[in-house]
Structures are given as C-alpha cells and as structure tokens.
Amino acid sequence: MSGTLATVAPVLAAVDPLPWARAQMAFTLAAHIILVPLGVSWALMILIANYKAIRHDDRDALLLAQRWSKYMAVTFAVGAVTGTVLSFEFGLLWPRFMGRWGEVFGIPFAFEGLFFFLEAVFVSIYIYGWRRLPPWAHFWTGVPIVVTGIMGSVAVISANAWMNSPSGFTLDAAGEVVEVDPWSVIFNDAMPLMAAHMVVAAYVVGGFLVASVYAVGMLRGRRDRYHRLGFLIPFTVAAIATPIQMGVGDSLARWVANNQPTKFAAIEMVPETSDDVPETLFGRLEDDGSISGGIPIPGVASILVDPSTGTGTVIQGLEAVPEDERPTTRQVNIVHWSWDVMVGLGTALFLLSLWFGLTWWRRRDMPQSRLFLRLASSAGVLSIIAMEAGWIVSEVGRQPWIVYNFMRVDEAATTSSGVWVTFIGVTVLYVGLGVTTVLVLRGMSRRFRAQAEAGDEDASTADDVPYGPGAGAAPAGVGADPGAADGPPGDVDDDRGAGP
Image (cartoon, rainbow, N blue to C red; front, side, top):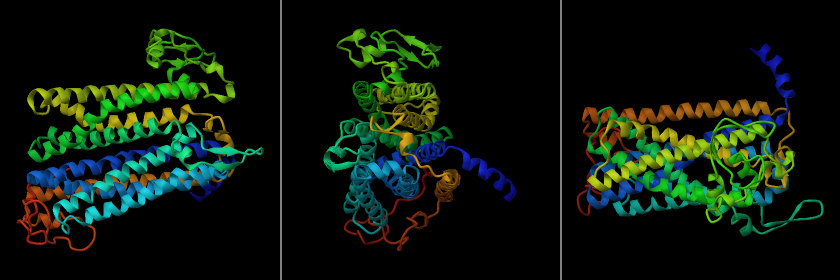
C-alpha cells in the first residue's frame, strides 16, 4: 500500500492543481447544499406542528414537533461541520482570490457567521426547552431559528451574488481594492433574486424531502393520523413554495439575460446573436458552433426573455465575446443540460403540487392513490437533483470568471501541488459524515418505531431529547395539567409510528 502511494503521489502532484481545486470545491458544495434546505426550512415545519399542538391540543402534532426537532439537531450539527470546511477551502483553494477580494467578499460572510451563531443558540434553547419552558414561551424560542436560518442563507447567497455582479468597491491603478462600500457589496444587483431563489428553494426541497419519507411510510401501510400529518405539513409547505419558486426563477432568468448575457447564451445554447431564438430542449453544442440533436421550439427563448417584443427579442450569442472569456463547449453543454433538468424537474414538482392542491380544494383531503404517493416519495430526491442542477447552472455558467469580468478562476486558484491530498482527505471526511448521518437518523427512526410498537409507557422518557440534563423531567407542553408548566407529565402517548 505504501509502495503504491509512493508511486502514485508524484504523478498526482504533477497534475495541474486547478482541476483538483475545482473538483474539491464542487464536491464539498454539492454535499453541503443538501443539508442547507433542511437547516432553513425544517424549523418552520416544526413550528407549524408545534403551533397546531398547542393551539388544538394535538398530540400527534406535538410528537412530530418533538421528533423533528431532534432530527433537525443532527442535520444542523452535520451542516455546521460541512459548512466550516467550506469556509476554510476559500483560503486553501483560492488564496489569490481571497488575497485580492477578501475584504469585500468577507463582508457578507461576516454577517452569515453572526446569523449562524444566533441560529445555533436558539436551536439549543428550543431543543433544551421542550420540558423546561411553558408551551408558548417555548414556541416563540423557535421563531428566531426560522429568521436566522433565512438571513444566514441570504448572507451566503449575497456573497455568491456579488461574484456574479461585483459592486461596492474601488480599484487603484494597480488593480487593488482601496475603498469598500459594505452595503453596496451586500445589496448588489444580483442579490435580491438570487437570495429569494435559494430561500424558496430551501422550502421546496426541505418540504418535499421530509414529506417523501412519510409518503414511503404510507405506501408501506402506515396511514395513521401521525403519518398523514407528517406528510401534510411539509408537503403543503413545498406545494406553496413551488409556484413561487417558478415565478422567482423566471425573473432571475430574465435578470441573467440582461446582465450576464454570456451565461444566458450558455443556458439557452445560443451560438450566435439573433432574434427568434428557439427554446432547445437538451441537444448538444458542437465545437464548430452547430447544435446537434435536441427538440427546438421556435421562438420561445426570445418570447420568454421579453414577451413584449416576442420573437423579435434579440439574444446575445456566445460568439459575441472572445473565446477565452466564455464557457467552453463542454461547459456550455453542462450548463444547458443542467438548466433543462432543473426546469423539467421543477415543472414536474409543480404539477404534483397542483394535483395535491386541486384534490385538497375539492375534497379537503390529500390524494389517496398509490400513484400519488409513489410520486410524492420520489419528490424529495428529485427536488435535490433540481437544486444541484441549479447550482451547476449558476457556477459553471459564470466560467471562466470567479468574479464576473474582474478575475478568472485560473487567476484565483492555488498553485500548490499538494491539493490532491486535501481533496482525498475532504472526500473521506464527507463520505464518513454522510454515512454516519444516515446511520444516526435511521437509528433514531428505528428507536421511535420500536417504542411505538412496544407501546412503551415510558416512551416519553426514552423519546426525550438526548441532549442536556433532565431527560424525562416534567414536561411543559401540550396536555399538561392547567397551570402545571413545571408539573406532572403531560407528554403525548407514544403510540404512533415513527417518523423519518
């Protein structure tokens, strides 16, 4: 083994560090972004269940809120680790980027750190307070989790939006940053729509992901009220967010068309500037600028960019910028296919939400067919794929720029020959974290189910938050004797099936 490593190491070290840096950043971002929607949206879903529990003395809702808060704690902790690794990677993989733009780029990240700190505090208070605070006081400690989760996400996206629409700084004759306007950096032109797109995506993905777990349980015959409620709350959140996301996405696409025309040309695979541009579904851009395959829909791309001018809307083609200032042919195909995947899956999820909404409007009940539940059970994974595809569109479409029109990616990357070592190390770490997280969540789910099947009267104790002192202490929740916030047990009977 050591001999093989000794043979391979010099070969790997001789490879250009730029692809290693890109691959490591792409891998860690792709892994971390799966946890982001849960970090942003799960708190709201918990509070909906918590509110229902307190307002209507709903013991199923209370049990859901309690268990979801425990799952949230696990995913929040793992997300904190993967996010911290990412923050170190900016300095490790992109030292020249941070050296030149650090005082600008770091501003939104400073706010993200503040919001993350506050979020961590209130997550701890909310989980710790289940059996220690009066019901409504405990409920309100969860509200800041929702707010800080959203604001933290907005801060991070503000940094990414600045990379797409850099503003709020002045360069001297040597190209160095000499003046910074923090508010112009944070509220750059791309920030409002990009932040809205990501925050709403978090509710789409988080809602579908949690609901899909209960859809699987219902397909397996667990159609009790607990599972129905566990499905209805997150799916309703996702179903409301999905059409909003389509509207925000449409506005963002038009912003890109007007402000990042080269990226938009890659999205729509437009080799030459023209009007009456078709919407080409899939297909492939060839090196000679021709398009092979795909399904062209005449004029639709021009119409979507500006309906007021219809097919007469001119879209800038890739040839409008020098070859070294636009995505490569391979990158264009990646961006275009990712765009089609994102839009296609988003449309499918919208139709599923529409099915759910119309059925509920007519019958005040969710669709009961196995076909709907099968589709709903796959919605979680499909929404993650759509979100990953959207990030590929955003990041690859900006190439070759790391700061649009100011700094190229190859000018920002590390020149260290040892990047492959960190790539392997981070990959091992993330795979280990991923496996451990799945095992922990499955273990919690099995424990809850075992308690339910055993009808364990002490489940309220065993099912308690596994953090901090006082497990099994007197609850202060729904069902407690009036005025007995610190009094005898009023916990739910744990006779329901387990959650995810």
